[in-house]
Amino acid sequence: MLARILSAQQERILADERRALAELVAALARLEVAPDEQETLLRSVRQLDELFLLVVVGEFNAGKSAFINALLGARVLEEGVTPTTSRIGLIRHGTAVAREVTSAGLEVIAAPVELLRVINIVDTPGTNAVRREHEALTREFVPRSDLVLFVTSADRPFTESERAFLQSIRDWGKKIVVVLNKVDIFERPEDVADVVTFIKESARELLGFTPEIFPVSARQAFRAKEKGDAGALAASGFDRLERFIASTLDEGERVRLKLLNPLGVGSRLLDRHLEQTDARLGLLKDDFAAIEEIDSQLALYREDLARDFRFRLADVDNVLNDFEKRGADFFEDTLRIGRILDLMNQSRVKAEFERKVVADLPQVVEKRVDEVIDWLVASDMKQWKAVSDRLASREAEHAERMLGRMHGAFESDRARLLETVKRESQRAVESYDKDAEGRRLAEDVRDAVASTAIIQVGAVGLGTIVTFLATSSAVDVTGIMAAGALSVLGLLVLPAKRRQATTELRAKVHRMREELMGALTSQFDREVERSAQKVQEAVGPYTRFVRGERERLTGTRAELRRIRTEIERLRAAIGEGV
Image (tube, rainbow, N blue to C red; front, side, top):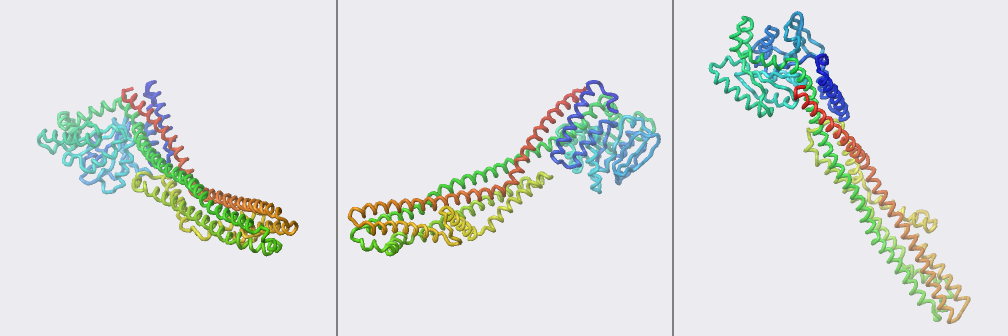
């Protein structure tokens, strides 16, 4: 219908408006906006193809029904001191007065009134209706309006319920006109002026602007119209209101308000969800900072462990250095001409080598390695505890601040994932078995050393492996010594044998050091990586959610801002009276 009376410029604006609002509908759908809000916007867009819609709101005792009857010049609605409007009433043109209640609970009232050929009027239940669903219906219908007539009673102007109602609809961008009804209760014009001033100040405070205010007596106006008394109609104040409505409802103004209607609804929804999107992005920014903090913790964890591990390995290396020194001292003392007879007894030399050189080497090495393992297990536990504490604090940081402000899949998914990750980290901390982890690590180190040394040792401990390695060195070295001593007896041979034995032992110890240190280092690196990977796997789902949502919301925010710029341009063009 609207398209039939538009100029070429207005048609271009209408096309741009439909496109911008369609893009807004799609953007809001991506934000998973509540279906009722999306439907509100869609209904306002559909209003572009309908008659001008004038919505009358106010408390049930403000005289809305009497006002509408006076406006129509016919008693279309019932009047009374108790609530007479129990549902939304849509009043439109018809050849005779008729009523029909739709399946949605809307009462459609037809009346043969000429004014209804160009507008539809909506009568709403009172804002203070006893049945709260009436008020909800009223608030739902307001966004569809092209013009809101707010009727307040002179004996109770701007009540608390009216203030609350106006406050709830002020952001819809509607043109609001205030009708001060029942002014016939005042005897002096000054009293009316005082109430008008009060309403102006209150409305300016609530709405941010001063609406048009018309003091009237709807009952006097209706009686004046019945009698055709122009003087009484002027005395009721209704003629001034009707002139305003006539000018407002001329073709140009109707088009302007009709075009502005869905843009106002769109602006309100857009601003609300831009604010919500910014809040979500702010929340994700803090979440992302927490995730980066966890990643930073893991990096520092690796660096700190690597540094401390090198120091702890030095303790093991010192034990092997002492072993090597004892061996050199043993050869210096044993491979002498004065002990030639002892050297001929290989088993005796071997036993003495094991007692003096090998000594408690296996036990000390195993103890040092166990200390490294205990330290590594404790560090792993500490790292899990730090992650768990950080996630728990993250969950609590915004819980109170965001309470009640945001709802939907984003909030539920975020809360669920954060709770899952936090619970997983807590479970890891609470179920962490240090003894079991220590045994597993010890077995892994033992197997790694045995594998490196190519030794089949079964399930024996690390000390047994070290004993085997050290004793093998003893067998090899004492075998050289004994064979050399028995085959060649001479003062010049023994010093050479001594040097050979020392060199041989050094090589053996060096190989054992490489095998042991290499196995420990490799296992350490695997354990650090394994621990970090477990943390990353636990945090991974939430990390992916935060990154994905940040990208999605950033794109949607840019789209909403672009649409807002376009809507502001259109509102400015329409406001200039195109």
